[in-house]
Image (cartoon, rainbow, N blue to C red; front, side):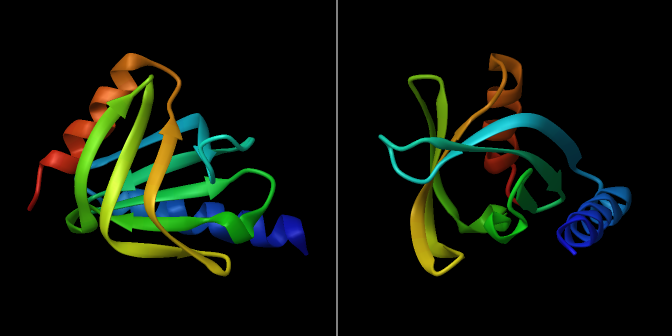
Length: 119
């Protein structure tokens, strides 16, 4: 059942990306639930005005960030930090700051640029 959920979720992400003008995917992304905690490893898919984080081992941790909902973005110690105007719900918790560690500098800059291009 878990593999079926992952397959359906992956297929949904690919379908969104197939129709998107602004799109890219980044593997090996680490998402930090807390600043001091262990990161969750997954990947992000960007499609037009949506950034989707998919947890590679736990599909319940998947969430979507809407570009217009990002108030500010900064790179802090190699991590991309999104400050959101409206918190996103991840499982049962709500978060208004999201912290991602992306694999390289070029990818970090690409994500920050994606946020700044408001449509």
